[in-house]
Image (cartoon, rainbow, N blue to C red; front, side, top):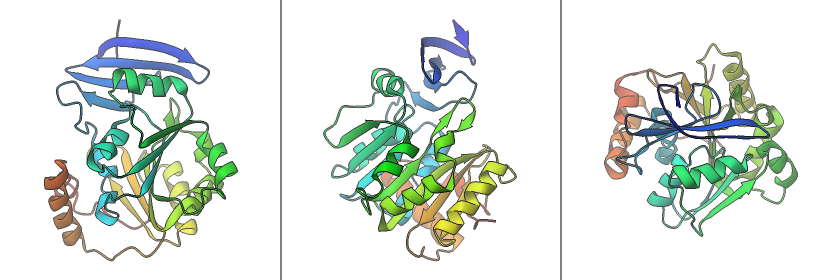
Length: 263
């Protein structure tokens, strides 16, 4: 069966809908019953970050280098970011909150997510989990990465101020929250989330539109962000690109006004 311009190699259903794995031109992608790709992996280079927006999310390393700290990922997808963190930071500990067990199973089976003692996967609704555990996890994580979408858009349980406030609570004093947003700056969802982040993080926030895509990556800082110039950020990104083998410079060269404050 062919769908989304590729060959469907897996299709299943759970309580949250359809899950599909599609291959096209040596790239395997995860879909939730709609055209947008939730995750992609090159079959020739499975360790490479395939999607531009995922590479953009790792720019958090410019501000918070990977060390032996603990990172929280909300929304697993195919596990591209999780694999990258495990590969690049041998001493990191990684917790993932994913609502759908079927997605976790598929990430292991089709997208080479490893079983690793540094990796803990929690099957739960992220909004519910943080609401119940924010106190116990107080100032636990150095980085929180949020990329949680369903077939309709951003998952409802994380699209609210209470959830983002809980994320702020479980971040370390110098932690960073990174979030993938969709639809451009005129999208009401982006505008509302940007407002909430600004209020919660005292306007210590930056937004990076991904060139040629609908994604905007938001960065929120628990303490004051260093006032890097655009030139300095671009230079640091080039250095980081050489170390991690990620094409960061394209984010800057193709959009010289890419990093902007919140509206």
